[in-house]
Length: 129
Image (cartoon, rainbow, N blue to C red; front, top):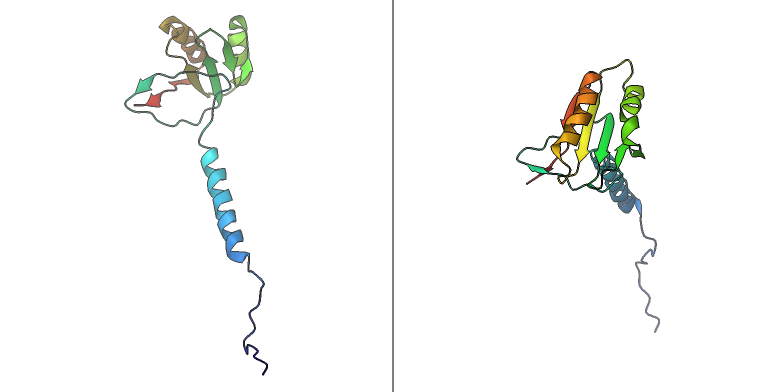
């Protein structure tokens, strides 16, 4: 007495739905990662009530041990003006200041004054409460 199933089950697994999900996740992470631009040096940003996202062209970072960087390139304090001048030549750019909250305000004013003298829009990076 030979019992055999009349309907044979196909052991193949369709990966098309899994591929669609992976593709959608890839697009999501690619789009959201462009909104976040981490600075190269570790900085403890001050807090504020409102924190707007600004598309930055030039990023200036000052750490609590007074290390300066322009677009993740470490630069001596004396060369900040020449570096900003070369990055902002012939255009009105956006400069975002990533300054540690332990750094005195005079350093912020100095860099902000240099950028404003080059006719750039200056913003200060903060983190929300």
